[in-house]
Structures are given as C-alpha cells and as structure tokens.
Image (cartoon, rainbow, N blue to C red; front, side, top):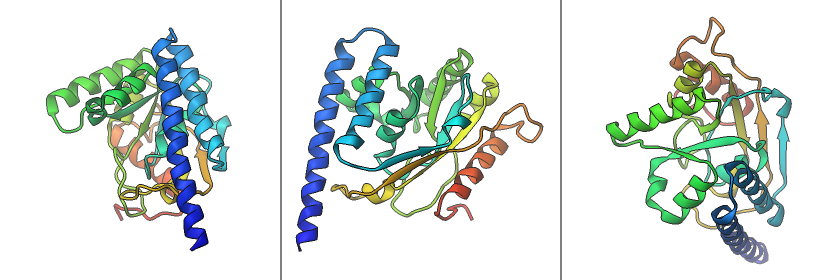
Length: 240
C-alpha cells in the first residue's frame, strides 16, 4: 500500500512538473525572437523535465550523428518520446508531428514556435501538401526527426515505418539515422494517465546513406532502418 501511494504521489508530481515546464516554455517561445534561440530554449526545457522528475536518462551513439544535415527516425512507444528526443538530441532538429496536433491550440502554438512541422495523416490533399513541404525543408538543409511508426499502441513491439521520412531523405540526399528508445513505454504507456518512474535510454545507431546501392528506394530504406531499431530493442516485430 505504501509503495502504491508513493508511486501515485510521484506520478502527480510528474504531471505538475510537466505543466510547469510547458508553461515556462510557452512564455519563452512566445516572446523570444529567432528560431535558433527558441530551439535551444525548448531543448533545455524539455531536458529539464527529466531532471526535475529524477528520471535517469542515458544517451549512447551521439558520434553516429553526421556532421551535416540528417533525418532521424525513432520508434514510438509513449507520449514521453517527444520531450525525450527534443531534450537530448542536439538543437537544430525539426520534429515532424501528426497533423491532429493542429487542433490543440496551445500545443500547436508551442510546437510551431519551437520549429516543429506537421503532417496530415487522414486527408489526402493535406497529406500531399504537407509531404511536399517536408521534402522541401529537407532539400533546403533542415535536419528532421520523425517517429516513423506515426503513432504508438498499447502492446510492445515495432510496427511498420511510414515512408515520409525516407522519401525526404532520398530526395534531399541526406543520411537516415535510426534511433532506438527504451523505457518510455514503462513510464507512460498507452491508456494510462499516471506516469511511473523508470530509466530511459536513447541509442543513436549508425547512419544509413541513401546513395548506397542497397538503399535506392524509400521502402528498402524504411525496412533497413526498422530492422536496425528492432535489433537494438527487446521488443517483438509486429510485422512478423
């Protein structure tokens, strides 16, 4: 009973810390000029969430990030994944987020001011328009970060990787960097509202270069990235 009470108290505290971090970030990104400055602010405040809640966070493989532009593709297991990658990837990445977030005014404003881009998933016209904008951003030299499954589900495992990230990488001729995230599903899985404490880890895997003969189309590149992420996780292949 005592353990359950302590867990509940920590979970409530984690939500209070999250609300405080969001409020501070919202104020700062609203008033600070310059996208680069806002990007650094949102990186710092995202990282502070894990520091304030005492969540042990480790990162390996930072040397695998290319010196120039790249497209990062990560598995998706929890709402925690977004703040985690924002806080621990180097500043400069624009996160590509599902278009439904446009319907949440505060979240949309904060994410847009922090440099996020949105992709419509359910309407073909909006989806094509957003996809063209993503490809243009990559061609213009913008590093992008995707949760390549598009969403997350309750059961553990890695689902199909959607093609958008890989089309952008091929057309802009930039490397794809697979990233494996572990621990966030334990902290806040789907259909659970109270977070639990636990360690999280980000493993940045070796880059894949679309110019190589083996990765000439988005489907092959997506599956190669997915297999590398799967190999780094202790989770099942949902397509097996």
